[in-house]
Image (tube, rainbow, N blue to C red; front, side, top):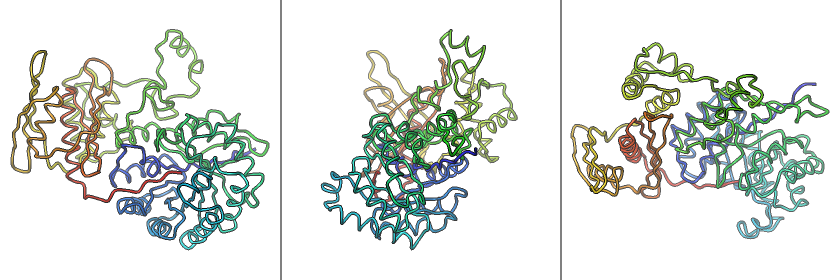
Length: 519
């Protein structure tokens, strides 16, 4: 028997970006979309075009420039939303409008203030209007899992007749458990007339930690599309993690085998999973927890003597999948100051980076600076160096000099030199600690005082000479900006990150705040 395909619908750029604190520029969204195409996702939900000019433009550019996947745009059940979505995805060769309206009693009463008859009419009208722009129409009854089953069946039957081709069943608030969600999918598949002409989709949130389990339970009961996000990003506790649902299907073909199919599969190139995960983490500023399944730093790490002994004798004793299958290598290649340019370039290619001549030269010089300070430079160091290099924006402010003095019984002070075009501005300041003093001096030199929302520092690799990566989140006028900096000196990394965030703030065009929704 042949395998059946499960469609992977990626919503990192729409629902994923709605994670509190996540903020992506249009260029960064486009970069992630291009990597998602390389990963092999079937559908990219590029955004919610009506919510802001930036969302519209990002969706339009993804539709115009990203080849391969279907490009989807989200729209509420209103003509204005749907028209905006249709215009944004118009350049795409394959396009989909995803329209939705809430169907649970609590949502209809308190949010929509409409009765079920009014909601049904709006859903049907939305699907019919979407047909003026696309043939591929997805409909979602928001908060489906807390909706009354008779009404859910009624509205799905009506939108099928109106032209819907995919029916998405969202567990919007992450309320149900796997057995319940599977039973909902099975009942809809059995009782909704004409549903055999449509694809049934899952969209599960992780409020109870069940998003992946619920998604796979839905697939087990007949769903053939999973809506998910890289690293499980999304509102509140997030969405189903793409890497987990994909590897769950790949690792357990026996569990998903049915009488009609020998198993299930996806079109995902799993060897691109780790690269995609790291890119999303670095651009959003969301650090991946070490014990995160599939892509966490410890996912394929073994320290226990019993485990190490078992893996050395037979890998499958403690590994149900190989690190190579998700784009990792079983052994690390360590680079150092004696590594030549050829070796460095070769390592970059092995890690999946294709740099132009200038980017290669800049990254190599940065590598040499780090290698002079460290005995060993690891793959994670290389990835951090390259991502810092290729994501540089126009530097309105450049940190030319930093000196910090602090210690027990000493008031922490910092002095900086900031280059602004052809001028150099100097400033000195005190603070509660060395980082605070450095930030105060930078504010004094630049004349800018954005609010510091969040600050994190982590070691990119282990050891006393580890490369440190600082990530800061600043805000001003209701907008948030993320800055990154790396150095073997964590104070220097912190200062670089703050200056980077200020540069991003200065470069921002002042797009309107975006309207966010969730399913």
